[in-house]
Length: 221
Picture (cartoon, rainbow, N blue to C red):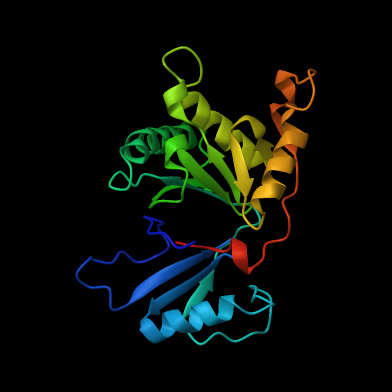
């Protein structure tokens, strides 16, 4: 999946000057810098290999690059692509604003950040977000709020809590990178409590480790 984002470690490009770009690859944490068309092809070729590079591997890369510190840091990407669907622009924008407010209020800026990104699918369930490095995918569906239950503020708090705990907010979980549709459905049913009547509020969070990330699950921003 390839998206356009305001992710701070990558250089901003003007629409009229895309001869060279910076690319961040998640959940690898690789930031490839100043790529031209040949550099992009080199990156895509690298990502198609069975074994991917890591920050500690001796593999030399054919482009300027750096590595993100992801062992203690969390990045939340929210789809705000209003030109793709107004729901993403409206609900995504609200969620992103509240995520950043929560992060600032709780002084988590050193380890948690929220970014705007272009379309990541599922716009009818907006707001949509992906939390890296785990790769959990959330659809908060703000349209359900109606002033009665659930708000962008509460959703933002819950997503940040899940990111910090390395756990999953099952009520809004859409899946995780490197999983088939069938695997995602099965995992959600087994962990969300929808297979039984004994689901409790305190079970909304649960520690779960997603499958090892493969090429299919790589996100490029």
